[in-house]
Length: 237
Image (cartoon, rainbow, N blue to C red; front, side):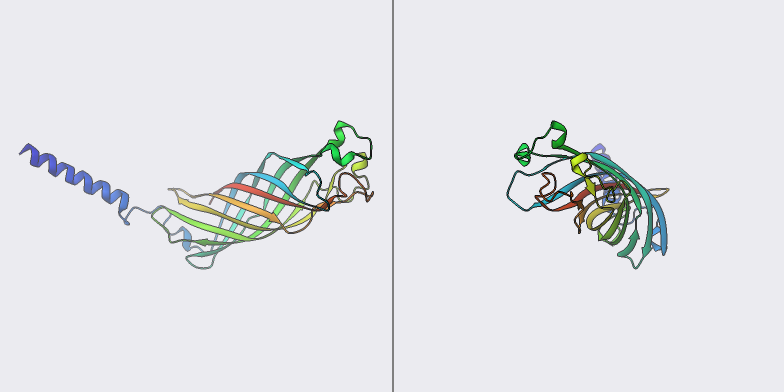
């Protein structure tokens, strides 16, 4: 009799666990959230920006030291259907990159240790228009991929500064254009939707403002200098 009771209890526990783990009939949080035509939210996150260089001659590469940056912004989401959404995510991104030059770039001129290091501080107003492609919602989460185009205004740009690297000013352009690709997961919590995303950004245009001297050791060997970066954002809607 005891064995029958134990087996009966185990059967009930197994069925209950199975229903909780595998049943499609779980209680859904924010069940009607994705049915709204327009939704809003905000994000905070981190970024790591880099530079991709192409060179005129095969000399020593410029080393880029990256730093962890910070980002914050707003989200506007327009529902197209159950699987496609159009998103606008204006944000403020702050970052810094350090460029380390090799001494071989200065073979023909005198230099100091300070000449081998250039700080590039950037504060971007980032304006992306993205297409979000989602899977079917699975209980309280929904994976997706996202991609699109964006532009950015660098508030730290010194493009119009007449001084250049000869007096320690490394100049970058004010307007930038990117394409973006990423992925994430929507988690439907009791009070709101939480979404972590990872997104790569890749510049389409050259960001470098060249020095007046065509033989400048800082800019003469650079064919293009394009920004690229990774965003880790946490969205609340």
